[in-house]
Image (cartoon, rainbow, N blue to C red; front, top):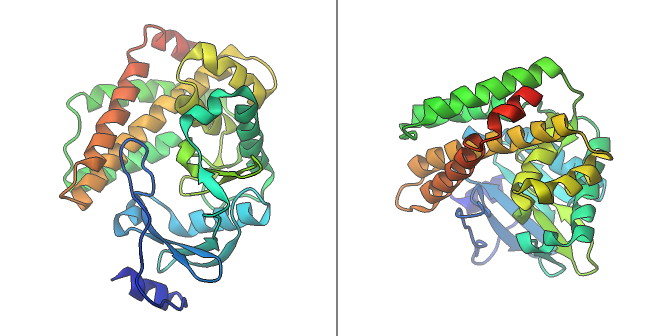
Length: 300
């Protein structure tokens, strides 16, 4: 179904030409799950791509976006039609810019981002509850069913992740609502420096250290730089919990690597998705081959 038809079915009056915003799968997966349009009267429309329903719980993501908007953590949701995959938000295009990695080299800005992500914990419970390991298994099945070609070393990757998951689950943990996606392109920077979170497709009730782990893997890949941000988030240093964050970050790379493979099969004719997948698996292998990986697992 054409996007215009979906918008009309969702109750939106659409006139003139629809000019979608830029989509960039590699290296940052910027808008690769949807097409986005600006409509009159300050409306910004996100129409989910057909392949996105394979790995995104669209109704749950839209509920999380609405709760975040009501709390001032994200843009306000003006309308939502999960069946059509259409979400209508307040249009902040002229008021905000998309964040970039270098922005959070500044400790003060990193602290603002940490505070914003922690504010999500106080929201009402999200409909979805899942760990990144659950999502890896789901993405693995999705990629196989679509006929994607997995990396030759995927069995080794899965075996190491399983050892980390077993230790984490044995340790037990509390769960809270979290955004769940560390990609900084999901952060809007307003003119006054305030931040907003968008794209709640990974949102779930989860271990807050998973949310921190995916963030650290994005903005602080090296331990020496990541430790201060961990302390901002957690309030104190804990080597075992820090290692748990690192395990979550590695698993998140595997999740996105598998999703990239699936999306490449669903949208042939471009190498962007498979490039993104390759990059995510490279990042995952760097963590799995770290000389301290086994020590981290034992420390969980």
